[in-house]
Image 1: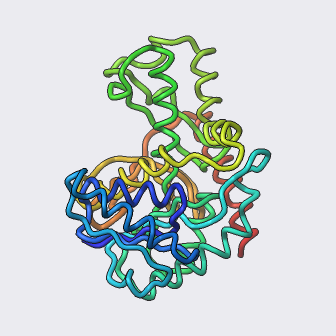
Image 2: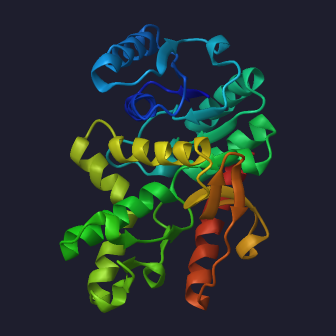
Length: 306
């Protein structure tokens, strides 16, 4: 198994380290345009192998030759958000970066599965799919896993329980219009609505929707990377180990949930072939309307990069 991570910034480097430590690949390649950065970070990671006890070989490079034959490519390239910026503010700059990166990596690894992490996430998945020409099963966006992790964290904080006992689901675009589903949220099988007031649930939902900007405002000069990298690696692990995990991911919909030709976060089965199935759950009229609004917001930005 060979895995390439594009972008040696905070998200990419942390993801590469976690992939190596979990030994999800024999070879991990870290790519960045800044000369010396991927080489230095890659060597630094590899030198931790005797201490952490992994045999994954980590290398860094500024070109795509070393990425040839990758099974999975995690794309984190692009500029991060700063205070006062929305994910959509990154649209045009990152669309150009993702198009270029995707074309170069796919020329070397035509059978790879792409996991897109760059923002604005849903639109970047669309750009990567168009640039690669790959089927939708092999171009998957990391959004719902992260959003759900934040949602679960806030619930655990409020109830004082283990995050492991919380099961939750968030649909829609990766942004302010994401659609958390309290009806499908439980703590050790107990519906969230039996443990918490609607007012408190609404507050947690709002915090989850603003989870990214909350961290951006704290950091001032960067954006979140520990949780985003963990979310991307969970997807990588599901694919590498053919785990058939049901995870919320951003994929192109072709009529599912009544949405067509738009990238939206929905529950999918992740296995060795990538996105193996879209899981369609029953939604209330209100939930369906919220999901459609979220999809419409994504479509507006998709149209801007055509």
